[in-house]
Image (tube, rainbow, N blue to C red; front, side, top):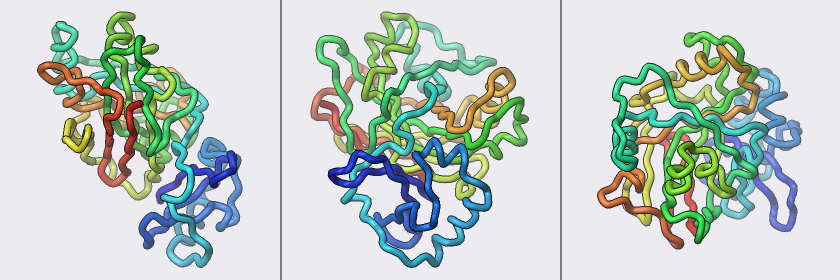
Amino acid sequence: MKLLTYKLQGDDKERLGVMCANAFQRFYPLETFGLHFQDMNDLIEHIKPEEMDMLRRSLASVEGETLNYDEVIHCAPIPHPRQDIICLGMNFKDHGEESARYKKEAFERDRAYPVYFSKRVNEATPDGGTIPSYPGLVDSLDYEAELGVIIGKDASHVSREDAFDYVFGYTVINDVSARNVQTRHKQWYFGKSMDGFTPMGPFIVTEDVVKRPPVLSVKSQVNGVLRQHSSTDRFIFDIPHVISELSSGMVLKAGTIISMGTPAGVGMGMIPPRFLMPGDVVKCDVEGIGMITNVVV
């Protein structure tokens, strides 16, 4: 299933929907199925397994009014994450190498442990939203297409074998980064956490319809030119490793978002570097999950 958050024209209330299985760009309001949740965080935390099963079954035969995705106001599927997003740095070897080249550092090819950092998100940017360029503060704005993993229930001391049982679903994330800010502070928090730096969406694809482990292409384009193209089977540290390791020392609460890292092809990795400018159109695509399109302003 593909779940979404949206608003109606002239109404600021966040609403939930589920995309039709057999109709392009059409979706049902979640209320069609007698389900009522405050927002996506509330749904992830409180929806019962039998309600999820009912929703899956009903999609094949439901008769009711549908809405057009292109005619509503798009929201990120989780507009307001309850906690900072957990991110992996350099989880593709080729991206680690281009990052080290940009920073004039040596890349440790056989790291035994992942690099984790967090990303503050006051409000995630939706499909079709804008990415601010911050003139005077940022001179090296960059993009990073990533697979986002959403935890579905509180996870503590989870084994690798059980890790996917704790995944609610997947989404697409653009981990927008201000490289000059990131570099001068010698850590990544501020340079990756500015308002508007987390495009996300367009949907959450539930875990049950995705192969375990996911083997999905990850791509980005800038102004129609392909920049990144890799696959999730090239992760250095895979999803079970990450969930098992993190949950050994912290509870991953329902709704936690983990961004799994980006492949090579970002702006700082080009020779010479090519960063985003106002007017650029950035598309991030994860196979089977969706594509988000955002314009730099």
